[in-house]
Image (cartoon, rainbow, N blue to C red; front, side):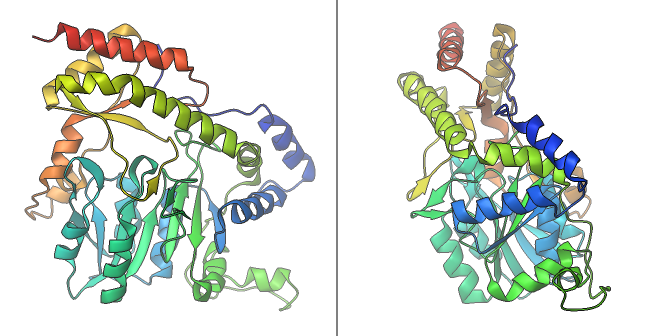
Length: 377
């Protein structure tokens, strides 16, 4: 079975992990954490970054930096991973769910605008599959209403919009280093702080809400609790693994984009069957080859295709159940009508895509899809 995903490996991960162990510092904010942060800021021109144990914990930091309180509203796409919502629900905020674009997993700015109300405090934009949302519109909307704009760039490190790196177009942004992402440390994340007036506070929150940074810099004789914080630091063992991958970031990204394009080029003639549609790249977007997906004509065809590929030895998967359709959201008894999100959830098929996948295997998967099409009445 060709799996949906295999974590990238460069061959240097164990050497760096051993180096971290020999250093005697394997908790957070060690030498490799600092190396990773320095390299990331240099590569992507982010103002400040903080490595975290997960992307969700990075979002939790963002929620603290926004000072969300009970009764505040945060607009989140319904077609989203539950971690995006959980991070803000834990602050006491109410999640308001926006619909996707027709035929694309990214959030619809018109849906977002229709949901802005007197209690709205923030908009969350998810760059699905590493493809940029309509950030210019969302930026204008956030600015005109005095709202925080948060990019969930879990999929999107290295992707761009209007020649700017995703993650740099908002107040705060987050990235995932989960094993399913382009580069990984097993489980990890990153908070990007683009506002200079929030960096000092982010540093305190990252340090359990203490003034530890000032203590380490010799500015105070002891450190103490200043505000609400948390255990938000990534282990230096994980950071050592991540550092090896960051050094190969461009090659990994280039290879994934090439595999993505191989899928697209070979499936394009088959799209004429009308049984599925290929992904489209939004205007101004430059993706990073994170996910290649198809949208089938209906849910039955999606299930048939996944089963056919499984029998042929290829693991294809669907993605999120929309948040508005989840048992947790249904208990609020609110009535949600998010037809585009529902249609996406019922028809999306994600095909295998990972660094060690060969172009020959991609073509074999395309041939298996052609066989499935030929078998349809």
